[in-house]
Figure 1 (tube, one colour):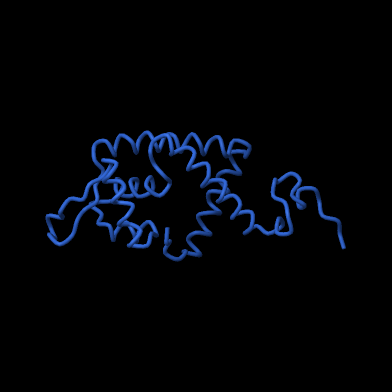
Figure 2 (tube, rainbow, N blue to C red):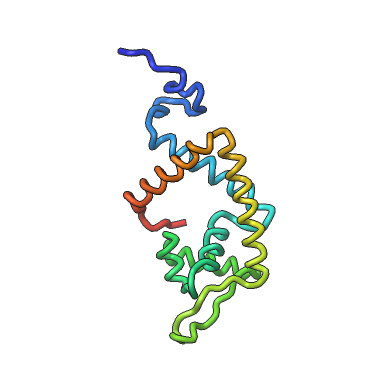
Length: 161
């Protein structure tokens, strides 16, 4: 049996243990790292990754309802209610009655929400640049493409958190 290289054993990759040679395991560990960095980055702005995600979704979509946001962003609809409640409590979003369907509400960023979103988006871009600094630009582009292909090929279940 061939001896594994230092990289395969996790020496250069920072991934150690019996699953270190599995790409999917590495992606899980990377997801944990990215999520923790997002939490650290957004906390000083009074946001969590999911509130940031929903606020960004509400700002980028055309008059979304909670249901629209849940479906588009992959959130459980019951969880979405709590996230929008939190954004309202923070004064960053509001529910506005839909003029075309009075039974539905649109989730819209407030003026403060739009300003906070711009600040948070910049902080997230800077955090991503720091996180990916060790990866050459060409490899960053390949990682971006590959992750997009995987996500498109394997749409996940609705999140429960």
